[in-house]
Image (cartoon, rainbow, N blue to C red; front, side, top):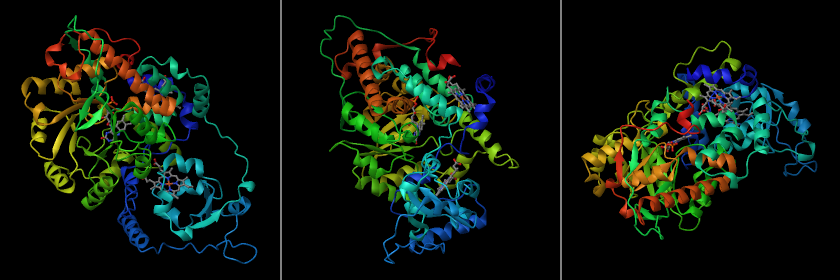
Amino acid sequence: MAFLRSTARHSTRALRSSFTPRKNILPRFVALSTTTTPITPPPRRPTAAQNAVALSLVVVAALGLFLTSGSPTVFADDGTNHAKLIPFQEVSRHNKKDDLWVVIRGEVYNLTDFIAIHPGGAKVIIQHAGKDATKIFESIHAKGLLESMLGPSQHIGTVDPATMPKLEPELTDDDIRMLINNKNKPPLGAMINLRDIEEVAKKVMSMKAWHYYRSDAEDGYTYRNNFAALTHYFFRPRILREVGQVDTSTFILGMPSSLPIFAGPAAMAGLGHPDGEKNIVRSAANGGILYGISSNASCSLEEIAGARQPDQPLIFQLYIAKDRKVSADVLKKVECLGFKAIMFTVDAPVLGRREFDMRTRIVADDDEQENAPPNSKGGVSATIDGYFDVDIGWKDVEWLQRQTKLPIIIKGIQTVEDCLLAAEYPGVKGILISNHGGRQADYAPASIDVLYELRQTHPEVFDKVEVYVDGGFRRGTDIVKAVCLGAKAVGLGRSFLYANAAYGERGVSKTIEILREEIVNCMQQIGLTSLSQARPEMIKYMERTVEPPKTSDYAQE
Ligand code: HEM
Ligand code: HEM
Ligand SMILES: Cc1cc2nc3c(=O)[nH]c(=O)nc-3n(C[C@H](O)[C@H](O)[C@H](O)COP(=O)(O)O)c2cc1C
């Protein structure tokens, strides 16, 4: 029903005309390719022969003997070795399968040999033969990929900028919608709450990016239940408590935080804003909160670390690769870069079936490969299954303890039983009750309900490890409820991505400030002057609930 309604809303023309890559996100291995170990990603649905090609590439690249393309290096007129600028007209002559140059960020590459092993297929590259492919390349590929996957001989030189053709804007319906909405968006000062910012993001983001952020698993019951469940917890406000001075600060694993919130690890902040995670890092520093960096970040770890304020602590979120050596290297690198804790995500052995995302992809697939067999699994899941380990188990928590001295947070716990198990590991200092924002198992319980059950049945766990929670928290009241039930801090995922997409760094900072005002206000209303006074007695669970406001996310569906 939701599907029928939503597709009816979008015109077929818009569906067909907008370019949508077959997958909406880069597989996780691309982000990991920032490690020093050369990693050549496996092609999608690889055959044995393709595997062999990929493997040989790793070996060849590691030896620094990358295949030469046989193309002539362009020398300066005076016969010296100084490469001269290449006129664009020269590039456009190499526009065939067997002689194929492209311009990416002003540099000319010979991709003749590369097309056969391009993980995204030969066809897209051939379509851009002899052209400037910067825009499409940057929209899909991680920074640093060119350097890590192409050999020096494939870099022909620099294009002469004076000869570049004027950009002919090829605007899709979606581009036009975004441009108009961006121009007309309300000023940041008009944003009163997080929903306001979310609404702006929905309008100004590309269809592809917005659907990736908003996506949830299957019918979205867990996604919506995260919001719905929160409406069952009411306060028992205390009065006459002299609430003139309110302290919202706390410590998360000993790291100071000005609010009981953190920015959760959410992939691909770059889909919303070109500065990606760097904006969130800077705003987190200004707002005095922590940020967990996704394994699948758009920016490289170096860029992210470089955007930090001196002494700003950051957390790294880890997915474990099949090849443990790769993950061990990532952990070493993260420690060297000064990250302060590891958040091990355990609720995504395989990706959830995110249908908004999948349907958008299938539309593009049909356009590109008319006779392609249906891919029931979905490209992203297939690729990730090949690279990340589906067979992760409790033994890997032990493995992780051996690999790092940093405190470990287990992210993605969905039952009280697993809270108890996780708290047994000495290296585990924190547990994050989370259902990945409803993106993994549909019908996983709302995080607030698991927190409540844990508080009721095993209050001792809160003394053993720090307990955090995320999923659907959008208001200061939501956050204070969780703190009353024992959460040390609450994570927000989509809200920071949306804010970054709508208003960049200022939007992320505004999100933190709105939450600060709401948290302070809530504490004053219910009689709290510090978070240590937030107790379970201040919460009452109500079977009955009230209609959600018409503007709220889950009310719309
Ligand atoms: C078949 C693929 C698609 C599916 C299943 C789908 C699904 C949805 C759903 C369920 C919503 C509402 C979610 C909410 O309100 O929280 C939505 C909103 C939206 N979709 Fe799609 N969509 C698809 C393709 C597209 C395409 C191709 C475009 C643009 C060219 C697009 C642009 C939008 C926009 C701008 C919104 C937000 C505006 C609004 O609420 O009316 N969608 N989509
Ligand atoms: C004209 C230049 C290029 C174009 C138009 C292009 C386009 C694409 C497209 C459309 C995809 C599929 C994305 C998806 O399914 O979501 C892709 C994937 C990919 N491309 Fe490229 N690409 C280009 C050049 C390159 C180069 C030079 C490299 C390496 C240096 C590269 C490495 C990759 C990788 C690693 C993937 C991900 C594999 C996967 O999604 O399964 N591409 N590319
Ligand atoms: C677009 C998006 C990407 C995400 N990527 C990751 C990820 O790479 N690693 C991870 O552990 N969690 C990831 N998450 C889950 C978040 O860390 C968090 O659990 C969730 O967003 C919280 O729910 P909320 O969005 O309702 O606040 C992602 C969530 C979203 C929305």
